[in-house]
Image 1 (cartoon, rainbow over the protein chains, first blue to last red):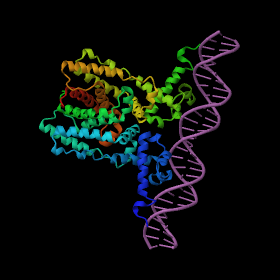
Image 2 (cartoon, rainbow over the protein chains, first blue to last red):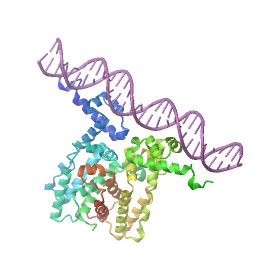
Image 3 (cartoon, rainbow over the protein chains, first blue to last red):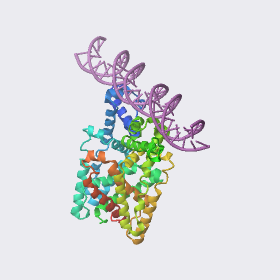
Image 4 (cartoon, rainbow over the protein chains, first blue to last red):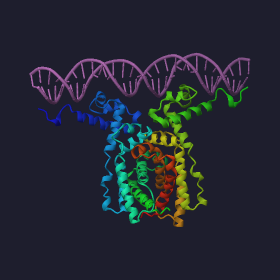
Length: 213
Length: 213
DNA sequence: CCACTAATGTACGAACTAGTGAGTTATTTG
DNA sequence: CAAATAACTCACTAGTTCGTACATTAGTGG
């Protein structure tokens, strides 16, 4: 008498376990550096199952990438742009991005790794196309509102603003090791977190207000 | 009668050729992805020479990293901080960083790759320690000058400002592929270059002037 | 409860990959 | 010019790594 919960065999659980381990391993060692045998050893199943469920190393990597992006998809939905004035809205978005990058280290690592491979795998995935659209839409609305109220004077488009915010938040996590080695400061350490979080908000607000002109 | 220029055997030339090819290959494929045989095939010499001159794959990689950093060392020396007012000085530094990252793609790739490996190789290299000091010194002087004149009101330290500038310039190049795949814009394309170059200058100036407060 | 299918384990192989042993030739030096 | 040494070639290997053939067992529908 077996219930679905305590089966010895469970395709979904096995698949999910492989994917979890794969994501961590690829993030840790890169695509070429990760070992299929190592991933298998870190699961409670065998290498055979990786090929049974995913087909091969590359497909497993793509699945891990998709999972990483999926976990992340809807950050921007939490910004209530309609009930916040534009200045606070863009500051909030910047700081949410900061929090998000701070909390998803494996995602950051996988994106960095995928760039080493010139995004060749992302392009093979249909799931990952047009994943950027929602943020751009949100930023556009904030920018429009800000120009309407006169708070924003700088004419920058949504993609540029998104890049400005992302670059700060991404770099801090992705480059923490070389930056730490060269400048002797771990930008991801707790004692720097709040200051840098405030900084990214100030940065984008100051830029959009146009004090630099 | 052989002159030093047309020798059949030339240790320096052989070593340099290996290093050039290695730098490009490691930047292209990562540490684990690069193949010693492939590097050898792309030179006019043999794999045996790689081991003869460098000892092994890892030492070759470290040598390539050191070369990349060396090519780059003295960007900041061209900023004439004493003859520029603080606002123009920091803007100039930001834009020089932009130009520099734009021109040294292999360097960017190698730094990104080195971060995947948590800077473990950089730490093995004595050459690369304290390479960051000069920029920090320069930025400190600009910040001090800016606070003295009253141009800068935001209290940020040199490392933070350096991170702000670097992140923007680095991200644009390093993440061009995933960013392009997700947002349909190649930030490294010529038609975006000048706008983004101006933007990084405006950004840091606006932030330091403190319009966001 | 039996047959069928989905899920899983074992063992193995072909190709690749970093690294080397041993000998050879060019260049320099006494 | 002879001896010594630095630069170089060639062929090889030990170990790894992705992938698979084949056997087996658990769960399920009839």
